[in-house]
Length: 403
Image (cartoon, rainbow, N blue to C red):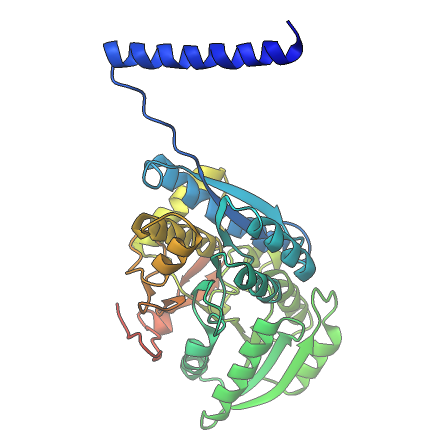
């Protein structure tokens, strides 16, 4: 028998075997249920490059959420499968990977990178292709992009209120600001800070200094800051850069109160060690309370899953993005791209997220409105005693303040 004949015989025998098994199953036991395909969710994160630490942390959160969903039975009996790609913190690579995952019809949605420049580049392509693209980011979703979604604490909404409250509570009158002029989000925060400080009576921003990404020596900037003798310094830098700046500033004798980037940008317990204790006493804000039951449950689950100490609540944005997608899939009429997009736009409160999101039906943003004031100690962050129970809840259109 030639090769083709053997192949045909194999197909016939296989079919016959399947029929026999089915018959036996019907005669003696209930037929086996068909195994549903996994639900393929694409993930593009900054696993290497300048933002590699943050991408790893976010991916930890995404994987934790997917594992929990699968352990609970998945989505309508189907398990989540993550297709994780590394964009190396690069815009062009984000575009390439968005096209790659978007071109794979089995990928029903993509969780994009949180770094703003990377995200903006990916969102454009996702909207051209027509695939839901969700990410945690401090700015609201772009208008006119129906496939773009965010779980967010928008800088635009609360920054002025948060900075005003902290400066007022400290009694600071003379303020200096240092910010990363190459980071769009941090540059925006610095701009919003300036506008807020101008409205405060008796308070003046004496100096505003822009620095570059991953700058190693802040000596010249510290000298300028020291020359205006500020009561407080607004530090709008990443965890690593902010720690380096505060270490060098204290070593050079600067005694001003440090106020960290709002919105959790410097709510990272690693700061104490990275700054060799120089950042102790820094005041900042965070979108999750250190004492909240949800936060404690998440920290315990994270530590158990990864066998390491929990340090950075940034991972909660990745976790929540996956949970929001899971909720959308459960409520969608069909688990496909358009079904998920429509469901995301009509989700109610996210009870299984770490944050307490507000979401207007038909909207693209899941907005955390609660902001907590925190202070860094050698044992991590605690609620700041001076504004221990304060709640920042600025007005956003279509959503209201809630507890």
